[in-house]
Length: 146
Image (cartoon, rainbow, N blue to C red):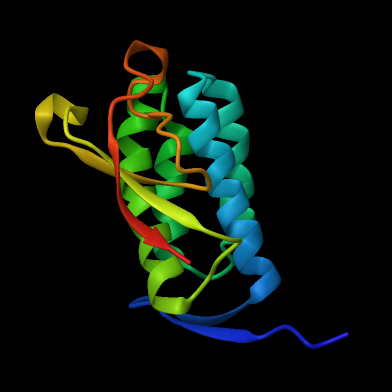
């Protein structure tokens, strides 16, 4: 069995090492939040966000933005917090080479009063976490991370 590869995170607040397995756990917890938001399941999104905080280790950027999602009192507020969580997880995945297979960076131009917002998915099919079943397939793939 090979030892886990170490990836150093250059966080402005603190530096830590995330091994490959932990990186996969971070991505899985993130995808669980995304899927809960797609299903408009507020409590499920909160539980997945708590898991992401637990797996994020010393990564304060992910932990702080995800804590806002946990504290949100509505699905709409969770979706707002998810935008920042998505950005932090995206940068971690790209800059530090974390992957659990192919990751799709997707974009909905209509999110947040047509400001638009990105999210990550482990499948190419568009399932929009910002609108759920109101506009489930609104968006497109903007980047493929392998």
